[in-house]
Image 1 (spheres, rainbow, N blue to C red):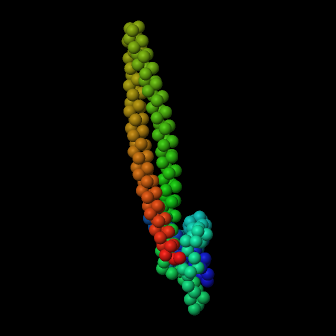
Image 2 (cartoon, one colour):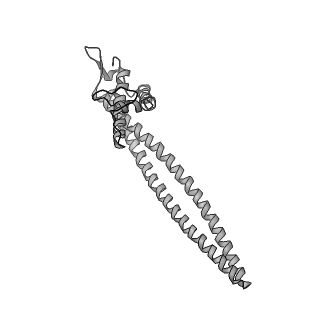
Image 3 (cartoon, one colour):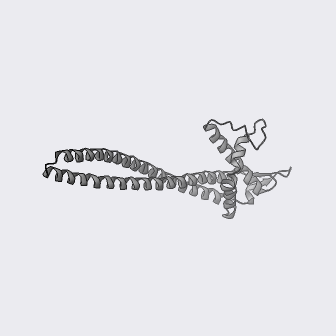
Length: 212
């Protein structure tokens, strides 16, 4: 890179490429066999292919935020005799903390969406539960009425249908508990992420202050 901004972007692209390569290898894909980027020894071509869509959102936006918020400055870069620009260690620390914070924020956003989906699902299941309980109550009343009329056959039929509904109600209660457990677990995760992000923001601010 021949200027600080491109040096910053290049560093972020390397971080993204490494993260992408790790994710590809985790699902059994070869990060070195690409489609759009030519295969070269030591080049993670598939990772470079995949990260193209992510660069503007994860890297370019983060670089602009760091500069616009004055968390890094041109003082954190030096020019070599060849004309290339290097980032110093303190600036690199700020960028890495900001990168980790960005990833945690993405995880937090996804966790909140997932939690909202779980809540919507359990609300729907509770509606099913209420409907089943209403039907069970109606069959209980119908059974009593049939017994009073000494209509044994109808009473037995109502009891059977009530038992079938009771089994469905038990299954529905199990589904509600399962969703409630998921909601509780993801709320804990959200709280942990919020604490981690808060710590990262403080750390980034501390590092940025040193640069001044």
